[in-house]
Length: 79
Image (cartoon, rainbow, N blue to C red; front, top):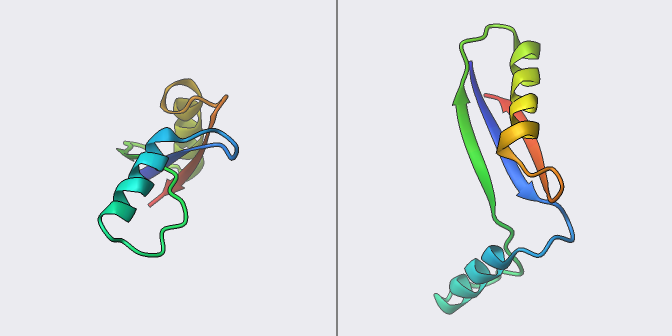
């Protein structure tokens, strides 16, 4: 089973990397960029057939390792 965990900064948390990317895009002439927020994506393959067990395992992994839940949100998707 394949899954994706997407981790992003919570609203209101300063994102200096996103600001740097925003500035770089504008300097490259990319028009219409209002703001950029960056994050992380983890594509994970699981040797589990049960979707509920897979989601539970991934949420546990995100809580313990993949995301800093004080400043980041995460989303788990089975793909």
